[in-house]
Length: 217
Ligand code: GS8
Image 1 (cartoon, rainbow, N blue to C red):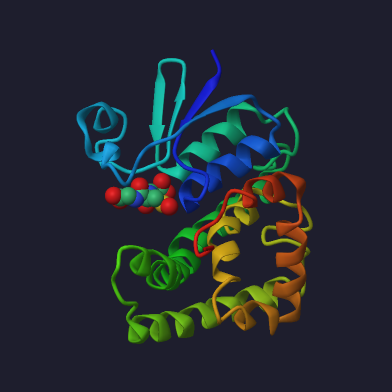
Image 2 (cartoon, rainbow, N blue to C red):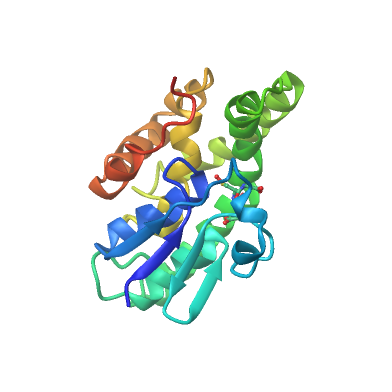
């Protein structure tokens, strides 16, 4: 039975999974969820994710939510297909991938999420962005990026000289962030800029980015 992904192509968390599916060259069905009609808060969807959020992946009788857990599942199940995103054959490399997966979710995401949310999502709901929240998080993100700049001066990608799930997890939010007035946070750091240009030009992500239309009129 084909993999079924419930979500929408412009959603950051859906695109995290879509990028992984394309990276692995897997067949899947994208099942649209009508967020504007509140479909994700209705019992049929809540039965798949009790938190009422996209994305959800169904693989036969297995139902998963949380985009990072879904990509980890796909990277494990299809480790022999396409790029080995978790470096199964090398314990140290695999451990470093896990370190940088944590860095993304614990340090990078909390800051970049706030900026993207304030800049793109609130105006869409007719609300005004809070510049003070944006400013605090730009400062936090800058500090995280200083660490990345040093790291990426020694290795091509975050976990080593290889593309991994840790890099992939950065794509969705950074893509939208680069459309904000603060893209210089990435572009002014040469190693981060080279890394960003490298990972965002992978065919799997370029395909997904076509559907990432937040902020476009
Ligand atoms: C977050 C899911 C999420 O925020 C994950 O899957 O990584 N930690 C979870 N989903 C958003 C769309 S993200 O573009 C969502 O479903 N928002 C609607 C809502 O919360 O009501």
